[in-house]
Image (cartoon, rainbow, N blue to C red; front, side, top):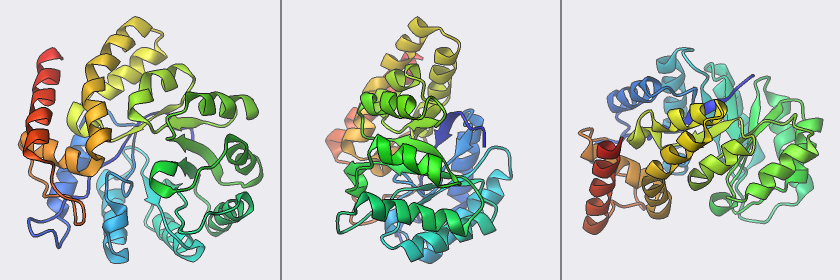
Length: 295
């Protein structure tokens, strides 16, 4: 898979009582992300509240997304499971329904050794034939995979073909590039590091930002690739206040609140997540208004 650009994360909309998935709203969200120039769609990540879905709901969202996108861009299904068996089952299901790749983040109650992490990805790779994006985000998973381990898996596990790096440490991206001799594609997963990461050679940016910022993230990517760094810097700093707010307050609930402010009610985040506060609502409204006016 020769993937680059903006990998967009859709929300998982719920009905007003929070008990069911609103697939009509999900379809509208997917169409909106495609209209914003997304180069791939990645359902069932942190933005999609995958940790709060039942297995049945997870599978319904995965299958619906693949069918709705309908090969217009690649679909990369997120997998985050405590057990290797569950991760393998979900990876097989994702491939079965037509996903183009899976994005796998290991989560664990106990700290895993590098050998255990290697074996986790090896088992998933052995079970499928589609690419795996290894996702490193210790802030949410509790597991931090070193650049050395990521590059080792790239060289030794056939389907591990790309990395999403979300630690916010630009030096890790440089090290991945150095250790792999530029052969391992890496994607930025830290919104506030987008400009620096793209300038450091990231193949793209994995982000929920297009939900609220429209085509702006794609334009930033295009300006960096075109070498228009002054324009890219201006675009980035226009987006940065909103990006910082999204990450600081919590991606799913901020994106859902922002979509409601933009006229699309997609329900609240699922409990135990709550809605943003009234003060945060006021801040978000001002940020969106300022961004739209500035753009």
